[in-house]
Length: 244
Length: 364
Image (tube, chains in turn red, brown):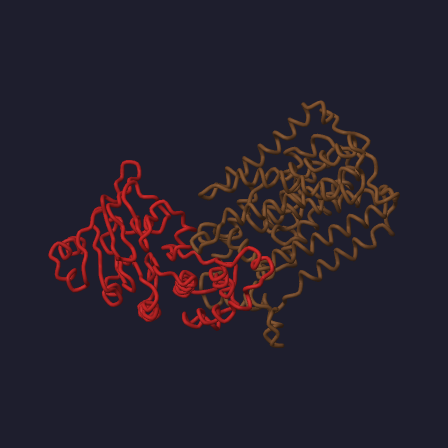
C-alpha cells in the first residue's frame, strides 16, 4: 500500500479549473517531486493534500485512511507535515522557541501549562538546530536569519513532530546555489523515516534528490515515473522546451 | 480595529528589521543582554501601589480602589488580545454579568460573604465566556477575526439592551444600594482596607497570569497570535487553545466585575455595554498589549488623567484625552511600556530554564 494516494483530484475556483482529475501516489521513504510549468496546478494539488484547500472532487488517502475531509490539525496528528511556500517561521520568537513550539504540539494542555515537557525536549531542540546548522543562532529572533536560513528553520520545524510524510512547497525559492546544495544535503538523512513530496522549479535540484516525479500540465497528470523515465518522456520534454 | 493594525505593524516591523543582513544580528543580541527591565517596572508599580493610601486623601483612595479593579479587568483583556490575539470587543459582558449576578445574590438572597461572592462572580464570568467563546471560537475551522470581534461586540450590546429592558434587573437604573461585602461580621467599606484587599487579589491574579504566559502554554499562545494557521499544521488544536484562554479572560473579568459591583454599591447597564468593552481595549493598547504590566499601567494612566482632566478642564477633557490616546496609538503602537521595554524581552523566551542546566537539577 502506498503511504499517500490522491486520486481524481479536481479543484475549481470560480471559473478557473486549477486541477482536473490529477493524482499523486507516494510510497514509504520515497522522495517524490511534483513538477510542471507555472499554473499547472502543483501548489494547488499540494494544498489539497495538505488540507489548506478542500478539493472539489477526489479522494486523498494517507496510511490507509481517507483524509479528504480532515482539518490541518487532524492531518498533522495523523503524521503529515507541511512547509509553506511563503516562509512562516514566527519572526519574533527565538529559533529555539520556534522549534520548541513545533516539538511540543502534542504535549497535553496540563503539561504545557506547568511547562513539564520543556526539559525533556531541550536535547531534541538542540539536535534539530544542529542538524540544520543553526545551533549557534539558537537565541536570536528568527527574523534575524537570512532567507535561506529561515527556510531551513522552517523545514526543521516541519520535521519536528517526526512526520511520516513531509510536503515541501518550493523549499529552495530565493536561495543561492550554495544554499540549494546544502538544502539537498540536509534533506537526505530524513529519508530513513519520512517520505517527501516536493514542489520545485529548480529541475536540477529535483533530479538530484527525488526518486520519482509526477509532471502536471494544465491541471492534469502528464506523466509519472522514475526520474530516468520522466527525462526520456517525449511529451514532458515538449512542454519544457515549449516554455524554455 | 486599531488593534489589528497594531499587530500588522508589529509583524511588518519585524520583517523589516530582520531582512537577514548581518547588521540585523547586533541589536537582537544587545536586547537580550539587557534582560531585566520588566521586573523593575513591575516592582516600581507595586511599590507605588502599596504606599498610595498613605499619601492620598480618602476620596482618592476610593478612586484608586476603582482603578485597581479596572486594572484587573484590563488584565483579562490583555490575556485574550495581547497574548492570544483574539479581538474581543465584548469583554464587559463578563464583567457586567458577574456584577449583576452578585448584585442579585445580595439583593434577593442576602448573600454578601466575600467567600461566596467572589467564587460566584468568577463562576459567572467563566460560564458566560465558555458559552460565548464556545459558540464563537470552537468551529471545525478557525473563525475569522471579524466574526469574533462582531460576535463579542454583539454579545455585549445585546446584554446591555437586555439589562436596560428587564424590570427584574432594574432597567435603566440597574440595581442600587448593594450592601457591603462581608467576612464573618466584618464589613468591607470603601477605603484603605478594600483597597489593599483588591490590590492583593490583583497581585495574585497578576502572578498567575505571568506564570501562564511564560509557560509552554504561553509559547503556544505566541504561536497562535502570530500565525494561527501555521500552528494548526503542527497539530495544535488552535480553536481549543483560543476557547481556553478566552474562558480564563472571562473568569478574571467576572472576578473584577463582582469586586466592582460591591465597591461601587450598585450595578447599571453600562457595565455590560460596548462603551465599557472599548474602554478596556484602550487601557491595554495605551499601556502596551502582551505585557500584562502594560494593561495595569494603561488603566492607571487613562483613569488618572481622565480624573484630573475632568476636574480641571471640565468641558474639553474628553477631546484632550482622545487626542492623547490617538497620539500614543499612532506613534507607539506597542504602547507606553515600549519606551522602556525592548521587543525581545516583551516576547520573551520559553525554553528550558538555564538554572536547572547549570545545577543539574531536572524538574521532578
